[in-house]
Length: 338
Ligand SMILES: [Zn+2]
Ligand SMILES: [Zn+2]
Image 1: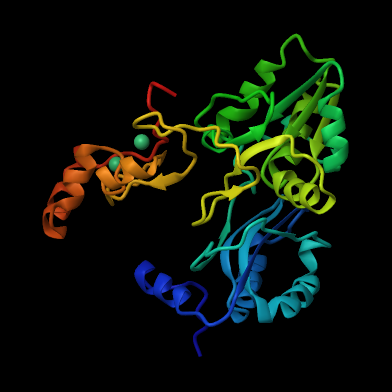
Image 2 (image 1 turned 45 degrees about the vertical axis):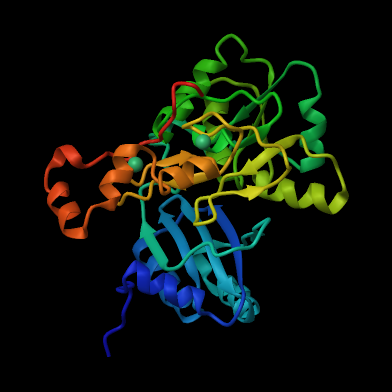
């Protein structure tokens, strides 16, 4: 028997299958920085284990650790926890459930990567044995109000645009690889302040804090479990959220609402809205923020041009795409107004 270790169905077929499921799924995430001797071997173990449990999602494995965002059928949840514990290489990992449910993933992808967070950092620039002190949500809230404190959002711009901690400093970079040098630059002359970092689930701050400490920032702290854990805790304990808006997530939901504040604007007309969309025109697929009115007007596309192109027949679209000039490179779309 040939063991199938990759998935071969079309996207439409996969989404159709997901929508016809008669059970619920639990969206969750976990990560661990832990030396992994043979990422490829672990990759195949994870793929076959998760596939047997009908798990969907995205898992990255590197020699420095593992990072996973997945959705697990609810009736397999206990078995999933049991089986995960038995996979030796990955250690004891806390699992974070999503804040809001909803269809998140429709297939299983397990990849071997160079780093589990793609900062493009060479090994001598950080030391995972020295990371920023972990603060629980309540401790983080208290620290924000202390004197000589800087709060930095360690995510990409499109994430902080729809939700962030009040008064957080936002690095204006487009690529993950530019993020850490930019944050270091922002801290020039402020090396002795208390620096508080946060990200979605905590994984990016682990490495970022390690880099900042090695680069001479003395007092670096990080939000334990990230915005996801923070949202759970403030809800459970009835604490007022210092995070406003939405937590951007990298699955089909594109965001989890944390508070009712809408802090972003439609990239086309400037109306308050915080819904991210992928442009409906297949050759564009740019990520951008769009209000309901503009979405109706442009058929969910980012521009008149994409709308017109999307109305062409599949054959016409194929011919257009043969011309490299008509392929729009993936980038984040921002209007000059924002
Ligand atoms: Zn609009
Ligand atoms: Zn477009």
